[in-house]
Image (cartoon, rainbow, N blue to C red; front, side, top):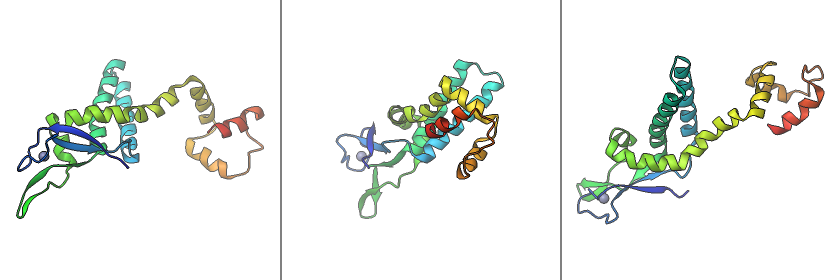
Amino acid sequence: MELVEVRVRDCACPGSPHAEGDTVSLLPQLSIEGGAAAELDLVEVMNAAKEGDSREASYAKLLVRWTATFVRYGAVAWNWLQTGKDGPEPVPFDVEVLVNDYSLARLVAGRANDLYQKAALDPLLEAAAPNRQQRRSRRTSTGTARSRTRGKTRTPRASSSEPGSDGPPLRIAR
Ligand SMILES: [Zn+2]
């Protein structure tokens, strides 16, 4: 897996060995932890929206949260060195250092948004697609997502309340 390097500052290491500057490395795609955290951000922002935030405010809030989430879960390494007993040694990676320093995190965040935002948005856009919405609301009237999954392990329900023609295609689509 090729990491994506982002330059964050002029080399600040002992002896300034990095002519290209100090870098932070990002995962090339959103991890499952990062995706789950992004979904949690979305849920929290949507709950705040119910309490009166405007659409624009909600969107701005979501982007801010996602930026922090993307840095926290996307940044995994850096090339920084420090002076050790036997000369320069790697600085142990600590994502908190990045998250707590806007001047460093800003550049990482920009690249992380490029890399991950689409993956984080996709579930949202899928859920918002009109035909999906319709299917989902129809299905939820017969049970929750979890009970639906359990239902799959049984033989097809003969007593389904859904129109017969609607059942099989939906199963295939999922
Ligand atoms: Zn350096």
